[in-house]
Length: 263
Image (cartoon, rainbow, N blue to C red; front, side, top):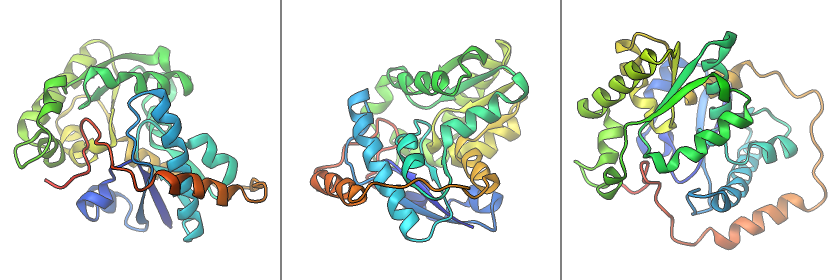
């Protein structure tokens, strides 16, 4: 199965090679990165609307290059509705799929994220849109605003997250324990950049840990072929690509946690 991973300015495959945690889980899947060419990080609903177009255009490229499904490599699921309105292949949101797993059979769940609290509006939107808000006992942010002031470099916060450094893992595990004490029967990781540490967290936690990126790929595997493909109006694909072309050369904005620049 050939799956396109649709990302913002970051993507596990683009920044860290073969994403071994996914390769182990899905040995029969070919995972290919298709980053968005819109260089605006979705800090607010305005930038989210911009990224929806960037993600849709990246998904269009994935379909044109023979992918049998696309998975959005972000819990924010940017552009998911647009993808489903134009693609002849299944489009899966990691946020949607991860929340569905977390809330399965009506269980209560929590969210732990390396993002600071200022980014929780993205998670709040997904909880409401996916209809699982009432099942969430809370969101714990192990990242603080101060962490985002020192992102780059071998000792920067980004490196600590990517490598699953002991200090970050300890903070995540403490957050998981806090959520479990509040009644969470499962915990979903609130950012796909935490995928690399998901197994470590799962092995040490007392409740099930949901890796949303892995949940998205699982959902893509299980998704049936579309019985009726949507029909794009003439020229729409070209217009979408022209709109993205117009901004693709602008300087990229860095995610407050998952900055795309090399460390």
